[in-house]
Length: 235
Image (cartoon, rainbow, N blue to C red):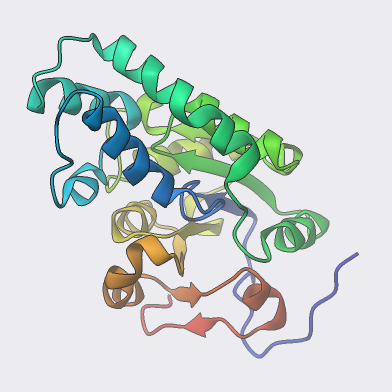
């Protein structure tokens, strides 16, 4: 069993559930999508617009496909677009993207404390499962909820509230890990504590992440050794 030093302030105090975003939070996968978008559009003779990824941040998977079809005047159906994306990235999520540093040890520690865990993602459920099972961490998570299953996507709280409902844990007893401001806002709107995690893809948003979140980490190891940042937003 993993042990941690006693800390003056414990991020996990009174936490019964932890809910993770996937991309940029569990796995280093954000860069995958810029390459996919570039290749997908390049096959059609379209140059990747600047700022596209920022515009897509708050969209769930199917909504993103609709956006591509509409904004790039694509002849394919939304289902065909999704199918092509899945062919391009499924193997990468299963075998190639890396786990965020220190994650597995943290999951083992949280599980040992009896904390229930779930995933709340804007991504496709098949890619969520591919990433979790491909890295041998699927058994740590009791629930997976995607934004396509709820009425409103992030930054609205719906996906986090649904995850808490399925975990059977009050929102105020949940801690959210997120890598971008849109997700942090969703967790905060759900009435949950939030921890921002460093990700190269969202480095330019670090100041905003620190302004919104209750805590900030560069890796999950910092949760275990107590070197995480406790921000002024802490409840």
